[in-house]
Amino acid sequence: MSREQHRREAPASLGFAVVTVSDTRDERTDRGGPLLVAAIEAAGHRVVLRAIRRDEADEIAAVVREAVAREDVDLVLLTGGTGIAPRDVTAPTVERLFEGAIPGFGELFRLLSYRAIGPAAILSRATAGLIGGKVVAALPGSPAALELAWREILLPEAGHLVAQARGR
Image 1 (cartoon, rainbow, N blue to C red):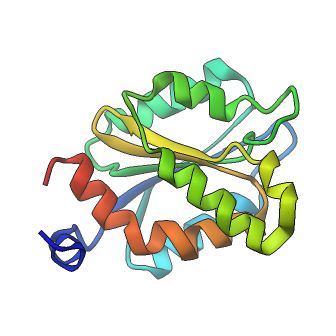
Image 2 (image 1 turned 90 degrees about the horizontal axis):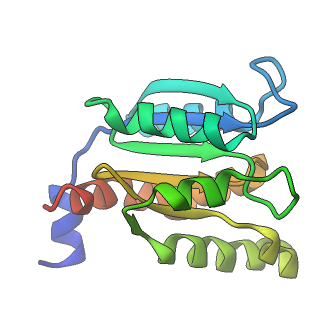
């Protein structure tokens, strides 16, 4: 089946979970989560779970497990905690949960980031994989990075990713 056929057969409307991971952000100061919510809704998709969790492995793992257990969630997006600072535990936490990795996601994100910000792109541990048949992506907290990931990767491929994760 061609890429175009896969895209045509992909679900048109998806349910997203959006989780901000931060020790310092709350509903008032979070910029990344609202940016993702607005982009998801502008594309005709639904945000069915929205949460903010501290950069603590147990809290991240719990909210990811909660999200992938929901029937109405197709894709889980986490924003924040993907750098290399000691407190940034999002990437290693979700990677331990992955049943299958999607290595091309992080590779492509860093390539696109390199074009935008240069070699500082190596500081990102953006990653994606499958958990419980759902796509889970861990993204940086930077609004510019989120916009890049959404526009260049997630928006064009979300439906295709979900269809493939479902085995279609």
